[in-house]
Image 1 (cartoon, rainbow, N blue to C red):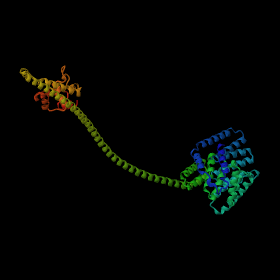
Image 2 (image 1 turned 90 degrees about the vertical axis):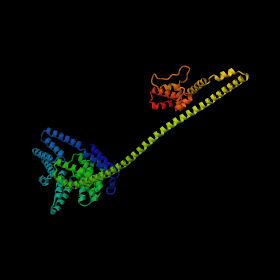
Image 3 (image 1 turned 30 degrees about the vertical axis):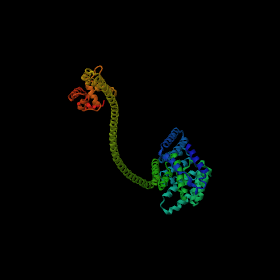
Image 4 (image 1 turned 135 degrees about the horizontal axis):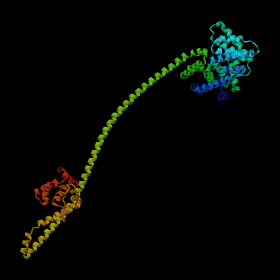
Amino acid sequence: MQFRAICLLIVIVLGATGLFGQPRYNLEKLNTDSLLSVLDGIVDGKEPIEVAKQQSIAMSKIRLDEAMGDKALFDAYGEMFYQYRKYRLDSALYYARCRVEVAKRIGEMDSISVALMNVADGLKGLGQFDAGIDILKKLPHDEFVKNSNYYYYLLHSITLSIFNENHDEDMTGYYLNQLRAYRDSISMVNIEGSPGYIINESEIYLSEGRYDDALKILIDFMNDNPELIADNAIFWCTLADIYHLFGNMKAEIYCLTMGAIIDKRNSVKTYTSLQDLALMLNDEGDTDRAYKYITCAIEDIMNSNARSRLLQVAKYMPIILDAYEQVQEDERNARIFYYIIVSILVIILVAILLVLSKRNRKLIEVRRKLDAKNKELVSLNEDLKDVNGRLGESNKIKETYIAQLFNICSGYIDDMEKFRVSLSRKVKTGQMADIKAAVSSPVTTDALKDFFKKFDVIFLDLFPTFVEDFNKLMQPGSEIIPKEGECLTPELRIYALVRLGINDSTKIASFLHYSSQTVYNYRMKVRNKAVVPKDKFVKAVQNL
């Protein structure tokens, strides 16, 4: 019921938008793509429909098993026949024959005729057309049969199948006359205004070459009675045949798609819509979909045992298969082409990566050299800072010692002047004994001590932590500690001069009024007790 509502809605919308108002001129607006997508979903996911059909058959079998009496059994066999009529034809024929046996037991001619028509219907589906015609022709031509549209439908359908397989040109006219007569009979027995009546009238117009009238009667009926064609696959397939005559392939595909959807939804397996649609899609270049549809059609025909339809579909298969293989070949060639392109691109990419890698290595080498240069510059900068520091220190030392030197010299000049004045007074007063005593008294020792004291004070003012820093260079227990009242010992004073940049032992001996050997002995004594290697001791002292 839900599917019928959907189909009805589609038809109402199409009618409301006027797509079928002028079918020969406005059908290009039909959206076949979305409808084909719906059919794809049904074909790909047909299991739920199959399950529902099997459940429906199971319910009918239960009613058959529970049937009490021939009348109920006759109806139950009829229900089973219609369950299998377009689903599995050999089973349909079986139940039709069972129905005939029950009808004979009932003894009603109308029931027997209906059951025999069922048998003829089953034979038609299995391709036994002559056997089916023979049964129909043997039916009593009573009022029931003469007013049965099922009877004339079977006559027309079987005769049409024989006509399509006819290879005798002399019989062509005979079959055409028979078909026209059966259509006329269908018109008389069908309810006027019913879908079957309209379809039959359209086919009569087609046989007379009145294609416009055949199309118009169907379109008008569709617009006026959309609910009656919502679940009628025959109507859509008939409309597709007319559009085929007009050469309107888009509208034909649309109608065949609608017919195929209805057939598949209703679990019909003896259809023509899907295979005809597959052939058209193949011509349109949609080979993947065509292959899928024709494969589905063959599978359904095999399951239904509709042998006559299998022969019809089989002739389509090589055409679609060849087209499908061609598409596959084209896709393979395309893939090979893409692989080649991708391979070339990969080679180019690898080449670019190699070039970039080479350049990167060069950049790394340049960066490494720059880093080395930077480190060298940093080292030079540190050395420069050290030199600048030493220059600053040297300038400070020079400024300090020059100022102190001027003070010392000025003091010595003052002392000498005072000594001269004192001697001059003593000379004038004749104090010869005092003069002799003053001249004989040694002044060098006291002056030298005073000089050393001033040197020590000036040096320690410049380097207040010299003694502590110097002793860190000595072995434990060998530290040099000045006596109380002293600033520096002779050893410390010698290395104080070394710290000031005077490393020559002769100059040190002259400055301190020591002998060169004494200076040498002091230096060797201290170096032997140092924790720093002898060749690096002087440099270590200069860095204090």
